[in-house]
Length: 231
Image (tube, rainbow, N blue to C red; front, side, top):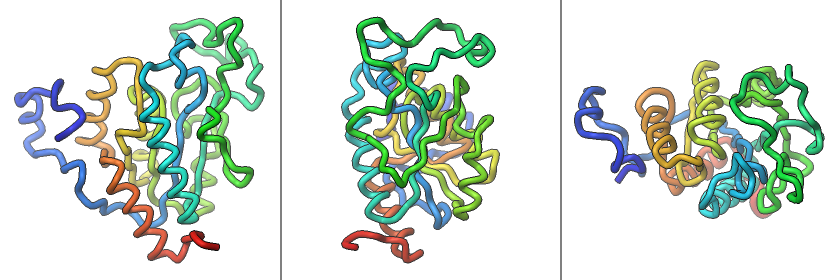
């Protein structure tokens, strides 16, 4: 079963002239992964905000599971949000050409805050990417990954068709192996979510169920001697 089975037709699949890798297939990516959690902030996780998605509980839980595995295995973790100050009001130049207004709502807490269930540790890096989709665009993320000799990025978060896809594509363009655990992503549009996962899987990334990604983290950390579990 694939997460896009109900929207990708046999004709579309046949155009690629090869079947997609199974969702439970073992991963054969690099051996120095990092986890990049994209925009799991109130303004995207909570449907009360204009940019919020509904039904994000499973994505939050999947990200929490991945975070725990990464931390146990000594795998570097990066988070993204827009600005360092959650109360920052972007100028028109910073905002760019997005087709929306303010993403905050009067009476609700500031939206540009990572949700409590996924609170970063002091040792983990928060990348502020302003109003652009990709975690790589205009940031030092690639330089930090290079310093850590990372060759594989596990990209999660919101939204699948926007910032997750943009980050995954830039990771691919920087010659990183890209893994996307689909349960740890979400989108306001179910169709956009599924089509984006399919497109990434057939071209740029390995989309997988959560279980083989967790196994990959265990395996690569063990082989690299990175595991901190029990220390």
